Image: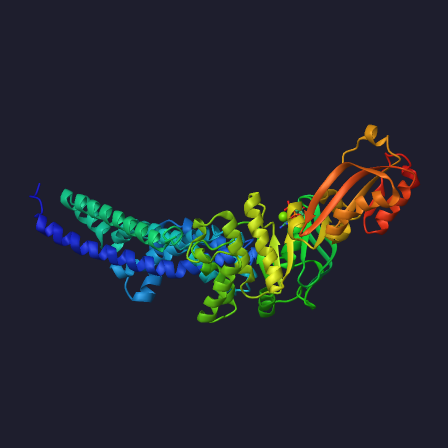
Length: 227
Length: 336
Ligand SMILES: Nc1ncnc2c1ncn2[C@@H]1O[C@H](COP(=O)(O)OP(=O)(O)OP(=O)(O)O)[C@@H](O)[C@H]1O
Ligand SMILES: [Mg+2]
């Protein structure tokens, strides 16, 4: 047995890896939400009983989304390498990992958003329809605004899921905490790396949940008013 | 004013087509209140949804101030929707918006600018008596207050027609009264034409000028409430007028027995006493009672008459504006 790596080195390595992980999670969550939310809105609009019911289109769209969701992430990582190279010219590093992370999360976000929007009561939506509001206005000021707290929660769920997946992406050259844990902790039997990455990952997940709850409560107008 | 012509709507059901509306004709004169009543499944909500332009009928026309709205699309449809204020069935307020924000929704859709919007919202909150609740969220309001805000919202864009589907179904009698008062004010102060779907004859009794009875997708009775109640055989009369019990033993001792419907202050107050004195008959009230339809007192009495000129007395009552129907159970029933 070699002597243990000094804590200061572990600390520096973990710090760098944490930065990489946060970068991957934040950017891929952002992209996944930007691209996935419209998919969710589209799914809900075309659903039977939606604002623009298109049963066949809805079925096809739903099928594609569920296909995307059922794809194992590791397979996606491999399948998307050529797309990543096309987009970024490289398949190594945190930036490259963002492509499969974001793409994999789009259908996930789509379903989450659709489920959240479906919770807005039909009589509320119909009331808006009878005011002569356009579909765009109803989506914006009724569907999205009414479900904003739940949408914030959906973003939190997505980023915690991506935190987990980013560890996996790290293994195939993405860097980050997962990579560090496997490379230094598991393969070299270095417990200091293993446990410190686990602790940091747990802290990040907890923080995301905490922030999500705060923001969700903050945007929820229902009971916060002065009577 | 609203005119519904030959409206038909079928839904695919598990056992073939369901004819929810089967050739419905209705008209509601400007500034009046029509109550649509009928048993569950009669097609009341379907009718309301068609008039609200939420459901497209298979055939027929829906005219608001003369224009047929059924075949409209796109921008024209949205513009038409602004002419019709709708209080949907159930809770329909945005929970993330204040009462004032909810009332503003149709004005935003109509592109009304900020300052005018606020003025209009204030007017409507005043109309429904909830100025002090402008900043409250729906979760902080009672059921009746929420429903009044829904009425204010429906009226915000100055529609010519107000449509309400079961606006009081979830409310207790007191709260129901406050919502009905608001509907009545809308008609009286804004001159809107109101169509209200209800299963509660109390709503008809309190605010409706006209009533339409729907059954199996057809209108089986339609007319002015006061006209319909004077016809004792109408459904409206039997559900709105005080009931009279049969009492053959008691009725046997009279020369004539009849059901008399009296409408209005003068008739209710004076007709029977005057008949008694004019014709020298003895007149007894055997049953029935007094009620009010809107502001009008209405009575239905079962009367027993004794005396030579009993027939003349009854005839005179009917000529003087009472509606007289001799009962078959009483003596001489066939002579009527
Ligand atoms: N979207 C729909 N799909 C299929 N059938 C429908 C639909 N809407 C209404 N129906 C059917 O049409 C008929 C009329 O329904 P409607 O809701 O208009 O009745 P209603 O008079 O409002 O009844 P209630 O007093 O119970 O509200 C019923 O037989 C109902 O099952
Ligand atoms: Mg109904």
